[in-house]
Image (spheres, rainbow, N blue to C red):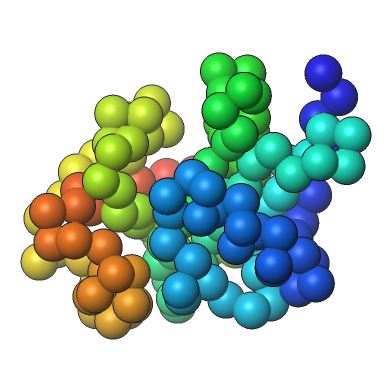
Amino acid sequence: MGIQIDHARPEEKESVVSFLKKADLLTEDLPSSLRNFLLAKHDGTLIGVAGLEIFGSVGLLRSVAVEPACQGKGIAGQMVGQLLAGAAEQGLQAVYLITTTADHYFDRYGFMAVNREQVPEAIQQTRQFGSLCPSSAVVMKRNLKYQTG
């Protein structure tokens, strides 16, 4: 299966929104530029999305989804790995995520659940943290300080 993972372009936002809606993920606050978003495609067809929003020295991993028929092939893992490596290269200290269903999935990438009160103000100010995700959602963190270039 020839999978291509590339950076998203602003003109692809409509197809990204449609894809994420099918996966029951939030789209209301997607950045219009889709900067730091990756798209996985097979023969030109969108089969996966993952994004990282950067707020100073921390990031918010979001919108990680893979077409159900393509799950279990490591596609999400490749995208998450690329985003985490890029975050470390950019000098981010930690990456957070908010999930209602995938906390056990992200354990394998070194994310650990944290109290909402421990989340930096910049992440707390996001629409995803403040209003779009339910307060029952799990907030997870992965430190990046120990990683180098």
